[in-house]
Image (cartoon, rainbow, N blue to C red; front, side):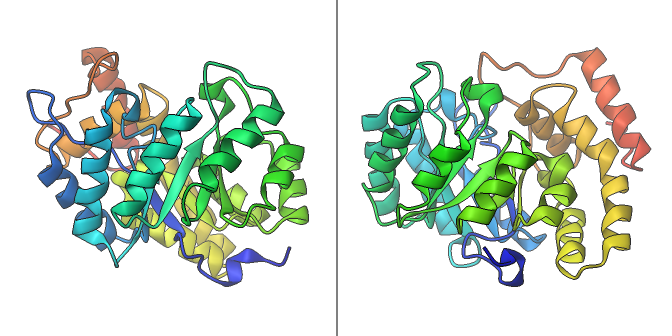
Length: 303
């Protein structure tokens, strides 16, 4: 495979895995979702993942998932790629949701490894191929064994690359040796699924990031990716060091969606930090630690 960073892929280089805003009563706030999407794109995102893990897809109904796809597509369609999180651990359900998303005009699908039921690698491959064959949309595989309990083995991924609709991978596994093999043997586009490893991933050949911390420092991540793609390693390192405490605050103290919503509320981007059970908002001690981390980066919220 040639260096994929030479061209911007159709799915983008800086994608945010969007939170799903809720009202104070816990209903999906589609208007707020549209406004957030516009802000993210204005600040440098060229792609958005809607109702993935960070979008609390596990606690959304199909109607709510589709409502989010529609709201974000209407808000920024044509300005950024809209990637619908339609993967579940039920193949038939994933096919149905993917087909409905396609009718709304989304630009691609994010399919997580089937979780909980622990299929064999043959089952993993059959699952992804069935969904990928159900629409004409480009598919991004999501390899996150920390949540799904199984990985997509390199051999499985190499086999899946032969499907014409399977074009990309969001890697939250960070097995660089395995990923290097897949990159060398296929044309799959890799995306960092770990905010803190963006520089490492892109140095290896990944085309970009699908992030959560990108909600709160979007422009700085845009500058990081642009510096890497310009081969300006000194600038990229500097930005990477600056981002570390923000990534720590967003990704390591509490669940990512929980922290992102809290920080977005402090920034005045969201009116609240409501999440759905079993997630809960951070307690006072967790908030104090998050604030300390952010203060290291010069982000001092006194509200």
